[in-house]
Length: 262
Image 1 (tube, rainbow, N blue to C red):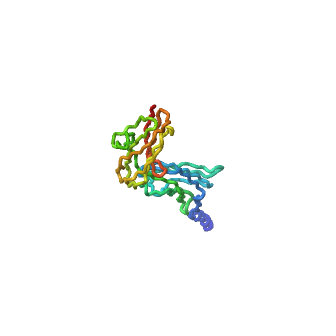
Image 2 (cartoon, rainbow, N blue to C red):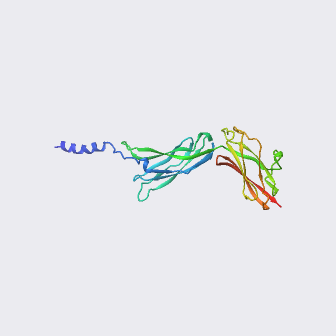
Image 3 (cartoon, rainbow, N blue to C red):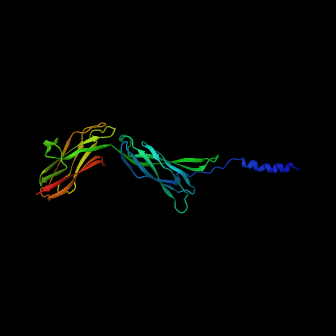
């Protein structure tokens, strides 16, 4: 009489000890990642925001930046993003990165995001990743120094001044040098200095290629460049922008002032 009762009571024990069902994770194709172009000097640090949108009907948890090709991830946050209802939800996850040497990155890097979603047959969260290309530019850590006006090309080693007075029709001489504050050697003929007069009626523009290479803590020669004050220039004052460039990317800039007298 007791045997059937024993069997009935034993059935639930068998069911409870069975395998846990798996839950499929959100597919990476359901996640949209957007990152603004990254531009920084070599070996410097910067925090970048990464916008993550979840287009799936299941949530994703512990969303964080796992890696950024050639860069170092110093620290970063993580967020949980709920499932899509009417509109796909999106949140920003931040990561603090350090740049490599400026020669170690060429135009794009790969950013990889990790997230937890779904469960395996032991009930543990499944970690998935999604990678996207990111436009990235790393520039030399160089700067302009000793920027200012001097009397003429024969006096390039004179002490420079940052405000200069000239008459209409005269040439104006500007001197400068470049210092490499980074760790990577800057090759010869890879940097350019552009002198741009803000009021075009008061001065012309000119540019010069930095012809010598600069290793760590190295400097260029003291260089000089001339612009001309037009003969019909109005009297008054204008900014003269001196800009250090690699290609079209600005590395450093200084402003000096030109006054045109009657």
